[in-house]
Amino acid sequence: MATANSLYSSTEDTTNANRACRLLLGPCTDQLRDVLRKKVPPSMFPIKIMKQKHNLPRLTPQQRDLILPQSGSYTGNYDDFDISLLYIILRHICNITPHENGWGNEPDLNDSCLAANIERIRIARNRIIHRARPALTNSEFNDSWTYVQVAIVAIDRYLSNGNHYEREVDILRHTTMDPVQDKHYRDQLAKQYADDQNTKERIFALEENMASHIKKSESKMSDIEENIAGLYKETSGRMSHLEERITSFCKETSNRISRLEEKIEGQKETAIKLSHFKDHYDVRWKKGGCLGRSAHGVVYLCSNETFGFRAVKIVKITEMDNKATENAKSAEKEINALKSLDHIRIVRYFGFQKHQDEIRIFMEYMYGGSLKTLIDESRGLLESRTQNFTKQILDGLHFLHKRGYIHRDLKAANILLDIDKKSIKLADFGVSRFMNTFSSGKVKTLTGTIYWMSPEMIKKDGYGTKTDIWSLACVILEMLTTRAPWSELESQAAMFKIGMGADFDYGLPEKVSETCRIFLDQCFQKDPEERPSAEILLNHAWIKHISYSDT
Image (cartoon, rainbow, N blue to C red; front, side, top):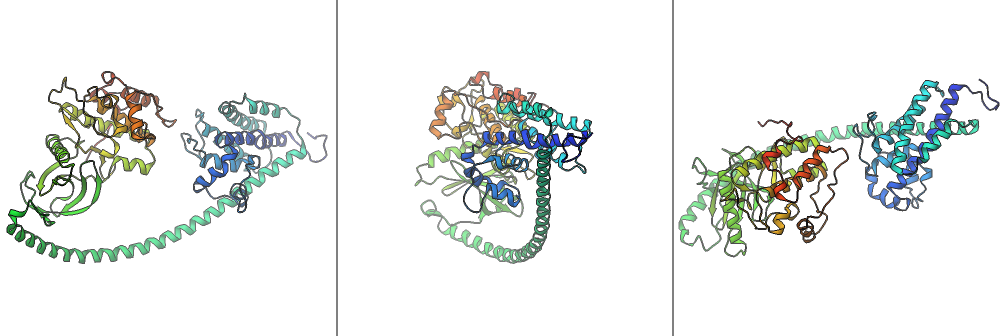
């Protein structure tokens, strides 16, 4: 069907393609610019881009000159950005939560989040410019138009602009086409496609180069490791002989100065009698690196040819230390608690020894480190993994509470992981409390870590096991958001907010389920009597279906 204009001969299919080009380079591009303006005001863009530039993928020279010019600074004109660059910036520096299938993938039909609709515009643009011929049948055109219109309408709602771009799209669908302008739009899309292809080729070349460098580095590292292993074997033999000589010397010296032992600083021994182990045998152990610190002691790794690796908590009780009495009471509490608590969700206790000015408590070594370290490394955990860990923590709390104990310092740093980082155990019972009158008794002591404390503990109204349930909810927020409630405040300000029962925003990711939010609401009940017990929570819909096994 010929047109009245002589610049080119048009058909219904080419008109459809031209109209689709105008849609993408007109309303779609303008709308993404408005999203960027809402997320990052132009005046803040230079600061934002410098802070986040390490998150950007490789850019074309033209894109880099626009946002990271080699001379001068960015002028703040978002109108220079095309769809490709807008997508990169919105995805990598604007902190927009990815859609369910992840950035770079086609979203589900029922996914209406902001990221999903930005993704749809990118996909529509790629489908148009990747076509072998510049034409669209009516069926293809209608499908593409509907696909984009859904995204336009949803983003209009996000922008609260009174359906501005939806109206532009409707007008464009019925506007008479301008051949000159159509050719301009087609050329723009073609240029964007060429830039994309060049960038992909450069990235592929860099990846090949990087793979080659990694292979060479791995070979060098293998040689170094072999050399270190040989040196370690030789050194270990010498150290073993030296340890035997030192042990003999320490025994001989100890016998000679036994009456002066309490007044002078003793020699550091490598042979120590662990008289409180269940099998009552003497073993030699080596002190390793520091694993962590608590309010009353320092935990180290220790090893032995018989038992392998264990953790030893050393609590100083010297008379020169003002905290000596408090440290001794804490050590006694922890020993008494661990001796009576044998459960798969609680770190295993092996024994203790009082040696000169310190108490040494020997416990199971957890190879996976703390839950806090995993959260920090992962920048928060997925809901499914959080559910699994929550159920395991509740198993441990249920056992504790049935035995009459309150943990009182439950937080991610006091929860340890096995080597596979799938199973957890509760640790650090230095401030735990045994309730002699468990059914009705109340405690009023303020202890633990402020951001995980319950309102009733801070107000000293008297509390019981339900204070651990509040702390559990704080740990769940740690897992999902990396932060405990009020952690942005100084400790005194946080105490005031918690004690007053101030409301706060959980700050959960968009994808977290409603059942999880209900679970948190119940755990964060300000009245402890309204707060469920660990036994009841184990049957909550959010975690009831979770199953796991321990080896």
